[in-house]
Every structure is written in structure tokens, then in C-alpha cells.
Image (cartoon, rainbow, N blue to C red; front, side, top):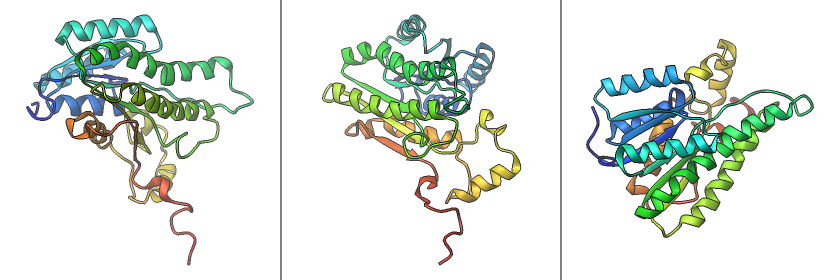
Length: 262
């Protein structure tokens, strides 16, 4: 059941929320009292996720939307405001990734990631900003990554570019809304064990990754969601334009675990 605490009476929207980090964020906000809109392009998985949360007594709504489409995002905003008449928390989280070298990457591959990961976050922010400005209150929490902002992965230049670009968006939006009751921040996860990521970690790679992370394990979606919930709360009312790294110490290491041996 929802915790009638910090987010009671508030309305949140989370994109890319059918599974993974987005579902963790949406379920955490809903459990803490927010009426929460889960947004995704995958209707079947979205409906199952919403049904599960609703069955647990949480106030949730599912909306199928493509964040790379202005018309689709505008419809999302209209449906959200028609549902509860307000918006308090906006979490642009929807993202995709891919792998291709600089030489082999097609223009379509580049455009797809920028359209969803970067443009999609902007369109989501833009669609809900008028309602937040009207009430002089809002919390925007964008999901970035350590990839592109602190580290990089070969053959993922498009993904790194989008995640780094989101931090520029956060800073610019924070300046534009400072003093108007709205904060804009980001969380930057490291390795997170989600349904989508599980297939990427064969036993050898998983063991090597865990050995490289000082805390010795991958994060859960709920742990990323806890950081989002802090930025979304009134407790973070004097924090804006910032990014919180949630990586178990991953980006602290200069050498692999156990080296140098001194």
C-alpha cells in the first residue's frame, strides 16, 4: 500500500517506466504516496506493470507514448493533467542504447538514440513545464548515467553523447527555473541489474564487473529510485542543477581491483 507520507497528494510522471530503472522509480514514488503515471511504448509490458501496482493498492495510470514525438508527448501531458489536474514530479527516464563503431555507425542509429534519449527528455520537460510554472512548484529528475559523464564504453559514442548532453540540459533548465519553485536535477547510475541488462552479463563478465565495483555488486533499480525520490522531495528544495552519481564507487577506481600492488 502507498505510504501516505512525503508524496501524498502529489502527481508524478515517469517515462520508460514499464520495466527496469523507470519501473523502480515509478513504483517507489507510488509507494510513497504519489499518484503516478507510467509511460512507455511497450503496451503489453506497461499494462502488466500498471496492473501489478494497482493490485497492490497504489494509485497509478499507464499511458502509451513515444517521447521522441512532440504530438505524443503533448497528448501525454494532456492526459496526465486531465487525470489529476496537476503535475508535481517529472522524471524523464526513457532511453535506449546500441553498439556500433564510429566508422560503422549509421545516421539512423545516431538519430534514434539522440531522438529518444536526449530530445525525448527535452520534449517531456517542455510539455509539463507550463503546468509547473503556473503552480510555481515542480521537481524534475532526469536519468543520466556515468557513461558519457564520467566514463565511456567503446562503440557507444551515441549513448555517451546523449547521457552527457542531459547534464547540460539539467544545468540550463535549472537556471531558467531557479526562483520559480522548480528544481531540475539528475541521477547518474553506474551498473544496474535490470531485466534488460541481465542478458548482457554472462557469468564471467558479471564477476569481473562486480570485482571492479568497490561495493562488490551491481545496483538495484530501487536504489536508483531512492536517489530520484530524494531529489523529488521537498527536502531537496534548495538543490538544483546537480547530478548525483549512484555507482557503488565504480568511478573512484583508477586501476582494476587489487592493483597496483603496493
